[in-house]
Length: 81
Image 1 (spheres, rainbow, N blue to C red):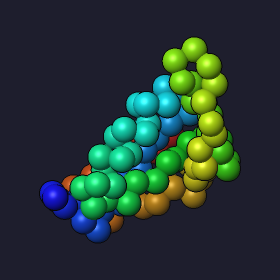
Image 2: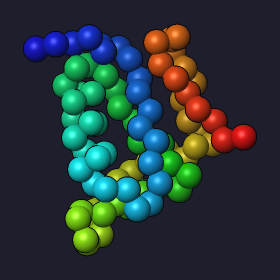
Image 3: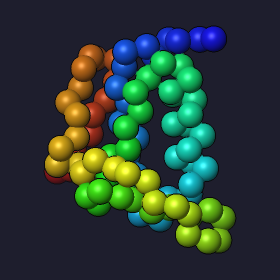
């Protein structure tokens, strides 16, 4: 098992209306590689996506106002202007 991302925190930036599989699959891959993947969104508390043509379940999210700061220069943290 490859753990290239051990100890790294990765922010997954999403807003309501994303495609569920485009969040779940990359999040699983990041966690499998050893990263701590956190969902960040403009919405406080939960964010909701689509599963094809229907609403999916809601996912817990951190508000962008309390987003984590970068831990290293290997990642990127983007902030609203």
